Amino acid sequence: MRHWIIALPVLFALVACGDTKDDTAPSEDTAPPEDTDTNIIPGFAADVLPVLTDNCGGCHGANEARAGLDVTTHASLMASGYVTAGDGAGSRLITVGSHHGSGWFDTAEQETIVAWIDEDALDN
Ligand code: HEC
Image (cartoon, rainbow, N blue to C red; front, side):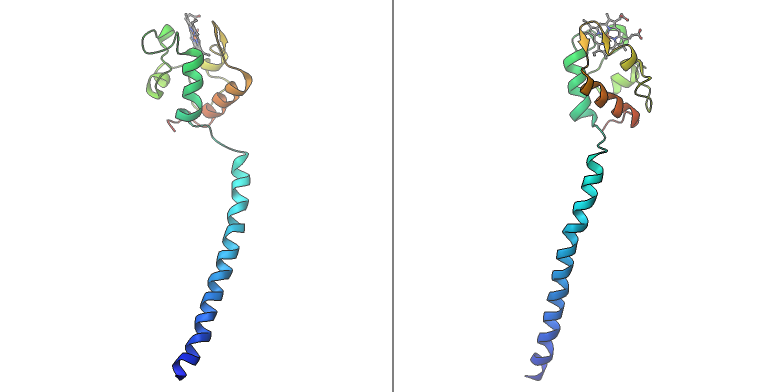
């Protein structure tokens, strides 16, 4: 019997500790996502590839790679030499490609692609 009387407060203390940890964890978790929201790195597959294939794929696809540019895969895009990793605004994909023929990026699309190239044009 005496063991129970000693053990119960210890158990309650342990449970109480567990509760405080659970309470503090979510508040620590909510702060970092706000920071990262302002600095999202665009993904090639999700953000860049659809824009390129929609706007440029008609002339710069696997079948008709005008000027040696095939935008349909990361490898072929990088092999074209028109993307300078780390320099979105200076890449020919942007300086030339964004305003010629019938393939135009709108402002948001161009910002997405420039940001992706600035972040090293990864196959992400
Ligand atoms: C209607 C067809 C067509 C579309 C759509 C098109 N292009 Fe082109 N593009 C061409 C042709 C043809 C050339 C080669 C002749 C030239 O340089 O104008 C070319 C050349 C290029 C070059 C090389 C230019 C140089 O002088 O180095 C780049 C880069 C380029 N395109 C990017 C793009 C991008 C990015 C898009 C989409 C926003 C796009 N193109 C859409 C037809 C097209």
